[in-house]
Image 1 (cartoon, rainbow, N blue to C red):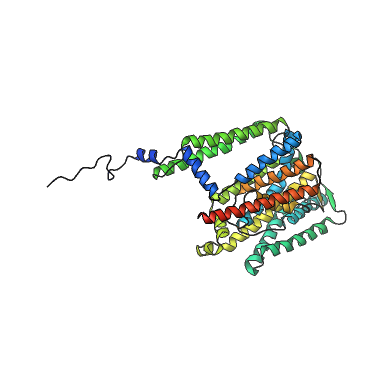
Image 2 (cartoon, rainbow, N blue to C red; image 1 turned 90 degrees about the horizontal axis):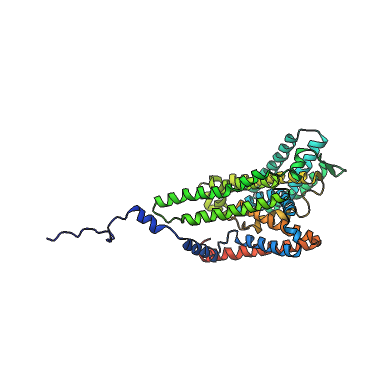
Length: 420
């Protein structure tokens, strides 16, 4: 009887060395680029459209008026982005569930009025007035959630009713004067108009995103290699982190030529990072996406759907209140015009333009940040060109329509490619 053939390194039965497995499963930069292109072709666009749009807007306005890209003008643009950007963060939460809140503008106006009445007229301490405004926002959001969960009232109708009720309450508490001036020397007003970060601190903070990308990438890479899965090459990881760091450091350097990076914009960035962490790294965030993708499937999976809706509406109204109080600080005034006009339009449009889907289940906190920068860039550029507000509304509406069309087409593409 002949001996059984012994396994050789080339035999399929022979165990491979772990290092060989890792080497064979490491993706190259070319592989990663091909995978990214495949995702784009299949409709997974991410934030690519808004980044391209922002570049186009910057080039066009800088050609028409070189003042647009001057450091101090960009600093003012960032100050203006913060207030509506914070409101838009709340809109992202309700849009992820496939719902809407039409009263965020009125809620911000009411909170602005509360600051003037409680702090200036009644003489309460500023922290108490701020807490009261945030608490009012949370209560309004809880009411919307109760109407939706218990009575089945569509969020469109509930928040539309709230828009009118909150606007009426704002006019009532401001009284016949209609406006309350805030102290210019106060910390709140200086925070909204003057305070900027020290140069060294802004440069230090600009290093953080790149460092986080490297640390997370190394941890993810090690875990995938330990499991014998494909892993991105180190060169791609460091290239991504390096490009981001260089871009942020240059932006900070350029802004510091002017007044510097506003603290209020820093607050917006901090809230974006916190919400992004909550949406991507916590059970609550996974529940938000699950409910937005398929409410019934989420319920059958054991998710407390009513609690998810409650948290989303409360967070949306609370952030709207915070944005309204910062808007009052920016204008140094609580008035009947606060929260009216295009606040609702800009807050909702920023979330949608930034990439949050109107159909629910897709979006991110960073979409509100990019979206509000696009909207404020359009507004700022048209103001520098001395064009009328009517044209600004039409252009913003056209950009919003394009964003929704792109979202709809991308959704169809994802469905056809099995990525929905």
